[in-house]
Length: 183
Image (cartoon, rainbow, N blue to C red; front, side):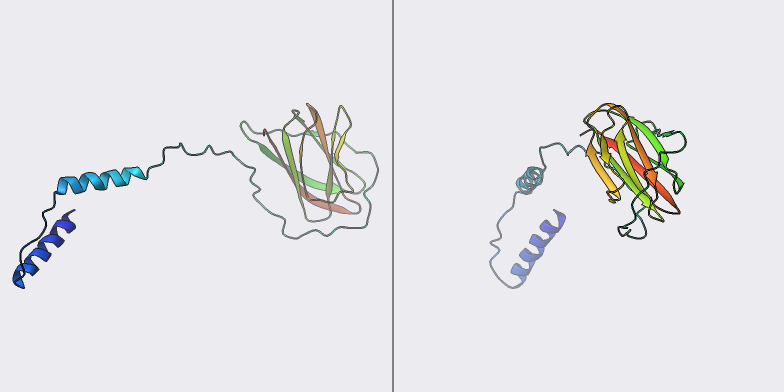
């Protein structure tokens, strides 16, 4: 506002100095301020901001892209007791990992509800892969012969779900990231 009034004063003085008529329109600065304030508030949105929904965050990505192998996974039974996956209070994901040696399988178990979306991602320095099935209904959700590194699906039942990790030969280190959310 001060610049506007200063500009008008400079123009008026210049007109007077050049001998032009001093017919400078008068400006009601209160009216200008009222109109400016009205135009500024007209652009303010009336909606509330959108609600943010937390999404799974994968903190590290595999350093190499695994290529499919022709070696089938073993059909040996799993060895050892399954490890129960615990989620921190309020968390939607958990990470577990270790090493797996042929012909053994590492087993992880977790409880989830029907209708929840589960995502499991494996990162491995070798060719470790995972399978998922329901413990009570024995329904397979992902098999070892599916070499996808990430699986996402809607859980069909409220029950424990088993995730097994295996390698077709030798050994590999791995990290599983398991995310469960309500849709």
